Amino acid sequence: MVYDLHLPAWKWPFYVVRHPLEGFEDLRWKKGYNIKVALVMILAFFLTTVAQARMTGFIFNSDFAKVFNIVPYFSSTILLFLVWVLANWSLCTLFNGEGTMKAIFCMSSYALFPYIASMIIYTVASNILLWRERGFLTFIVILGIAWSVVMMISGIKAIHQYSVPKTLLAIIFTLLAMVIILFIVVLLVALFQQIYIFFYTIYTELLYRFS
Image 1: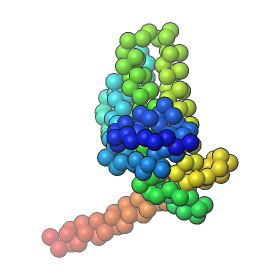
Image 2: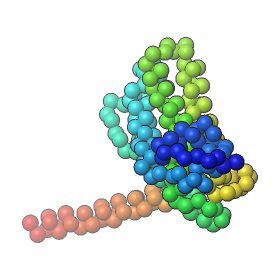
Image 3: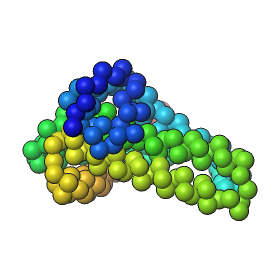
Image 4: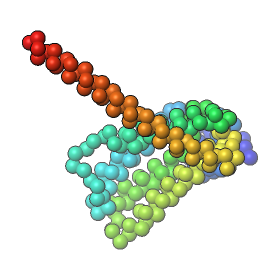
């Protein structure tokens, strides 16, 4: 059921969190997708991941690294998200999906909202709670992940107008496509690295011979 909603762009993520089943249907028919809001959500996803790794209470943080390297956090958040969008858009064009890349991008970013909220709560609470209360933190994280998964499934179903089985199948194939894309990217990076080393070796050899 589509309700007569006239929400500003920034309110749509809050609406679909409360109504994941019909929220994305409303969002699709109202064309409420907003790139700026989606970018804010992706930035929040990245920042909360960094904050969770760096600011979690020392009692619960066993992987604290003295040297901060932003690349792994960027790769596991923004880069992985973009690969998801590309993989889903590529496959769903073959599966007769109706979603555009913009719709997939915005929907996927909105679906991250519960996970982002759970990471914020986890980071703050980890500096207050004791070790024996760690069950609360585990519950918060599991709840955030589970709710984001429900929203992602609902969003894919809504924007592509799939049935539930076809939605699940599309998600599985999207994950497989992500693995293939990442594998190809790793191969290309290794190839360009070898090419760079080859030409750099020739360059240094020529400098040595003619200097």
